[in-house]
Image 1 (cartoon, one colour):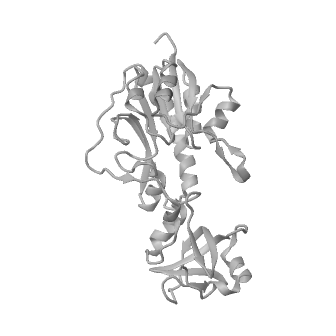
Image 2 (cartoon, helix red, strand yellow):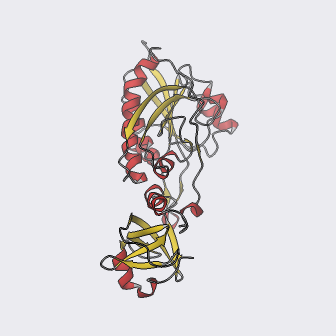
Image 3 (cartoon, rainbow, N blue to C red):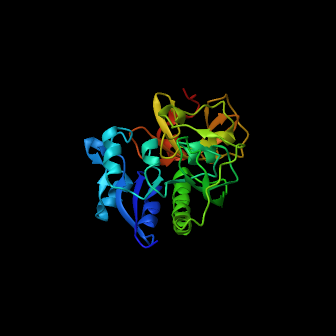
Length: 312
């Protein structure tokens, strides 16, 4: 290649920031614009930009924020940039076929799972909930399906079984950036071939809703411990007891045998709080509505009536 490849990046969340940095620093690539989510109202109505928008403004790069990428005017605006390459990571909208067919080097997606496992909107929480022994990042050539395009490269990552969603997202973002750095030159030089995904082992994930975070005490203690780690920061893991809503930020499987009825909050160890389920889940770090984060022991001391109550 003698001319710089005109690239457009589509991304929104924190996972995408190391990836767009990798693209911007790729030899022979001219990053002509970024496409990201519109500004949304933040705390107290203040406008809040997504991480990719903040990065673009810090680096003085052109930025498009279409409310609907499928809209005809959005497609025309992006097509006017005459991109040779689209790269997507953690964007949040479906890319229409009219844009996928536009660049001569295709539209590439960095997806934080070992495809075809955990296609869809929430692969990182799904990985933790499933207690997978490994995960990774897949670089694929996008097609009209949901994360179903042929694979260009993958990078595997072993898991310890203690990861939270934010920690895993950060680790996989770095892997994604490295994977793009090592794979993109070969792709642009036609030295890599995109191969169809396996037909076996396909799993689908869904967008998370607030209600997904509500604790069901009839779940196994192992599943609830994984839920606490998987649903950070959204939708969170929470329960209501005695009229008080409590978010659980950190928990562990207690060694004590459960004493009490399913859904009851009991005292454990030296004064902490445990939730009786199919086992006993010790609540190590919690946050009552309107309050600060604190240990389960602090909550038990400050809200003496919580011990013995049953979650709603």
